[in-house]
Length: 243
Image (tube, rainbow, N blue to C red):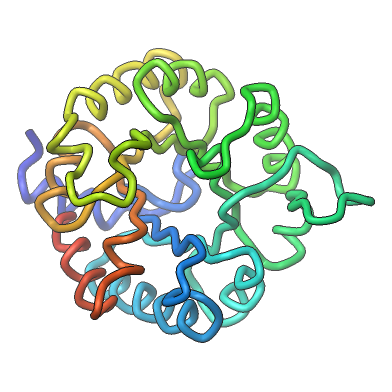
């Protein structure tokens, strides 16, 4: 188990080649909630930026597709797409090629989220295209076996998120701790440089702290902030878990 001193030291770590967004890392996925679109997305992004600086935690935000460019222009923290397609730029109406993320000022993308799944072949291709553009992939996996399989594409980050816990109030780090620790061990054997994040039901500092104790190097969060009456307070509560 990590001591509070160790967690504090890790929370001040800088981006490196193996952790280009920083580690431990707090990623906020805004999804497409009405409370997190347009001007609301910008307000939440500014709060996340300020809080990340205050708590000395590496943070990143993944807004809805049409807000990536807007947030990338006004924020200094990494702005990520929520999805990328295995396509080069061209005649692909409605698709999100990695080149369009780069052109918008994005720093990377979530890949294979359970709400927008891809085949393993498409994950591999998307990760390749993102890397060609020097964009950072965060590949999502649903369980330990999925984590082991997807680690073979060697993404910078892999987020393990059991779909049945996403959007709920039971964190994977407490409801299914074996999934987190199992994913960490599985990924480490296949791709030692990949950083494992923990998601699904993470709502407070205790969930975050437990995730770090289980070996994850950050969290992927959505509804705990996007559905909160006070997003600023929700962000601060979660970041306290990194101390």
